[in-house]
Length: 123
Image (tube, rainbow, N blue to C red):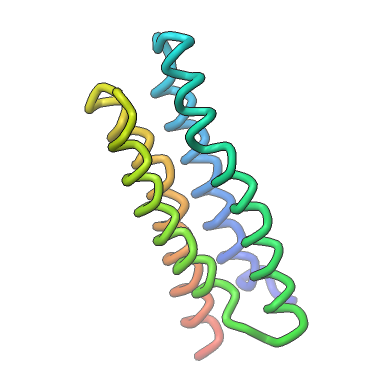
């Protein structure tokens, strides 16, 4: 295994870290009630993230599925679901946009990982 093969994994980890930082910074100075609404709106989605990521990784391990592209598609869908859920909550536009950006950063990093994996596989 060469070091170049770790690039997609590093990109996805960077996206997760970036998303977590954006999410935490957006919640500074937000009322506890609003934080509670966000937490309750996304509890099930976070659990589904864990199940979906595990299923995609296992599919890649056992069936040689295109893991990076499946992750990118999943987080693209998760971004759309997050946007729909955030629209229903009484949030400021800044907070809503930052929360969407935190999910979108993971999606963008998964697309970058899938692209870099495809480029590395072609060489």
